[in-house]
Image (tube, rainbow, N blue to C red; front, side, top):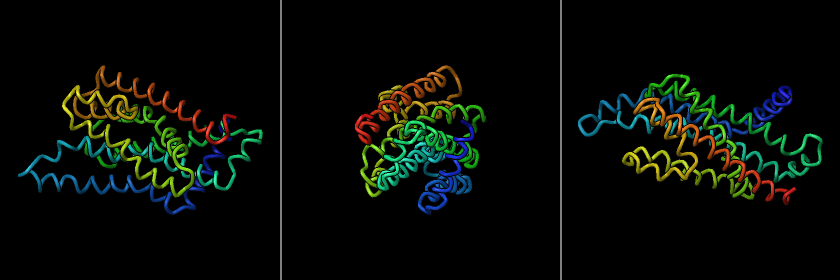
Length: 245
């Protein structure tokens, strides 16, 4: 099984490298994290007479890091649309490998890539100090969101052109949970119906209040809600692609 995953991972890596736009999606936010590591202290110093930019460091760091697993899902979704256009997915359905196995081996690759990039970007930007294990826990909590991103693209878009439009509009799904940083405490829980809210809340709690019981509750709720959402979306995706096969 490990060898199969490694083979799938190599194939996915080659697909990304061959497409300059996919490469840009993968490297853009980590590069931005490095730029912000240098620029934000200077901007904070320049703006200190007007407002304290450092107050918003957790929100800025969250935008640059937490969106990465979702974006890896978007990349996978665009790859699925390309294969749908080429009728590759229908061919996979009649092979011994089967589409479910093919899908999940691929999604594990993009989940792994998303978490690695999340941790890397958090460490690179360096404006929010958290224990490495806490960042890892938040990253693991974000794993199902990679699958959600891929399925959102696969369900809404009919082709790659529509897929790019979905990618641009998907920022709305991310903006609500992130902007909860600006909402008074407890009122932000009203956004909890959005699965992404809970891992974002866990990140904010760790960065601003500390790691306590509410942090772990947010992690648990994040995992449960995102997994439930991913299962529902996967079933809808299978029904759409293959008529419920």
